[in-house]
Amino acid sequence: AQTVTQSQPEMSVQEAETVTLSCTYDTSENNYYLFWYKQPPSRQMILVIRQEAYKQQNATENRFSVNFQKAAKSFSLKISDSQLGDTAMYFCASDTGTASKLTFGTGTRLQVTL
Amino acid sequence: KAGVTQTPRYLIKTRGQQVTLSCSPISGHRSVSWYQQTPGQGLQFLFEYFSETQRNKGNFPGRFSGRQFSNSRSEMNVSTLELGDSALYLCASSDRGLAGGGTQYFGPGTRLLVL
Image 1: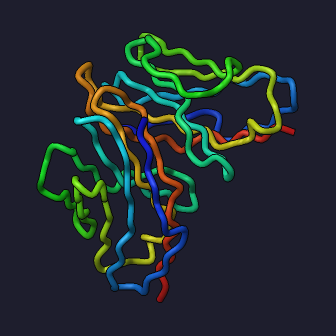
Image 2 (image 1 turned 90 degrees about the vertical axis):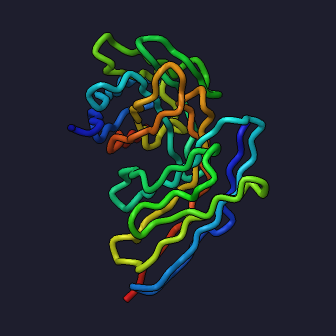
């Protein structure tokens, strides 16, 4: 079984600043995938970034990047140059390589302020 | 490509009734998964269908069921509704193949309220 833990229920950051959201996971699988999803007030779940566990290089998507520490089972999300539109609930999730069955953390509510 | 669509978007039912939710995946995606989101339990996996076959099932009672059609569209059904079934139901489609490793893309969800 997989577990995902997000220890920061809420965070706040000023516009244009950088913020890092934490996530730890546990899995017995050798092949797995990690994701960050964003859920704004509209409740639409939007993919932010994906990381394959077998890749050592950290994934990046424009202003979003991850710090993937496989041995520590840590997968943090860094948002650079924060924008008001980044205000949302952020979920860390894991999936095995053989199933489309995401295990989610409890989420971090991020507020971007002026 | 058009995204994942779900109908209806909002639904109000009473206890004991049944409900059917529909999900149309992204064109070409053969895997469809369903999730329940509640304030108390968070996001929980219900089941996954791949090429009309249920491949994985979460820990939900038998009142929750689903199916997938040959065009990959999926439906989930909840019978004998309970107050605790009030939730946002999210459908996701994946470009996952038989070997696994896909990325799930979510629809806008169906918000179900049971009175």
